[in-house]
Length: 270
Image (cartoon, rainbow, N blue to C red; front, side, top):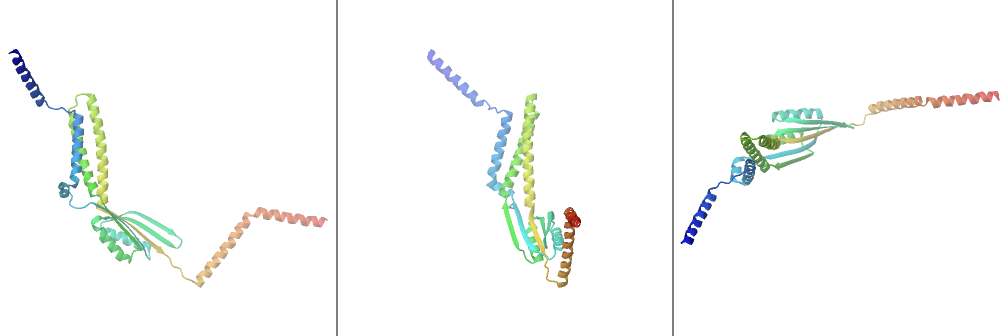
């Protein structure tokens, strides 16, 4: 009888312990909860990059288009003005200009930023305006996946920042406050970095870059009078150079004159 009572009590005790364990809530430290939340949000966002949610969000591809064209022109100055006027028409702008002159030729390079929607039309109109290109190169880079991933990372980082702010508001000691503030500083630095990358992608996809290089080569023909005139100028310049050389050698001329005079005097005495 005593054994059966003990067995019943043992079963009741095990059942009570099991029931208490099943009702016990799991505890996660505040910092761990924020880290777990960041991981879950980041993984979820990256998984959605190839999913239907992203397809619905991204209405068009994010493309970075760049190009270079090169051609000859009769007047570098006139062509430069024409290119600037065309850019104004297409709401573009000049990002950089470089001018070079060497020998009998001049060259000019304009780096233009053009709205992506007007890029192809601008290149076609430019080719018609100048006649033809000596060379043309157009490249396209698809950054849609990177753009969406960067947006998702930014959203995730801001959610983590929100969690840390919530934890900071409930911090009870100076140590906890300092620890959370340190984590907040780190995540805000990451947010600024991601925001900078996103702004760069937005700018590169909104405006395409086109490097426009054109050159002017002067053509000179034979001219008798002009060549005779140039010959006289060159001869006179050469004569002046000789005089300058003699002027530099005045010491040697003086020494030679002294030697000659000295010899003549000795001959007369002898």
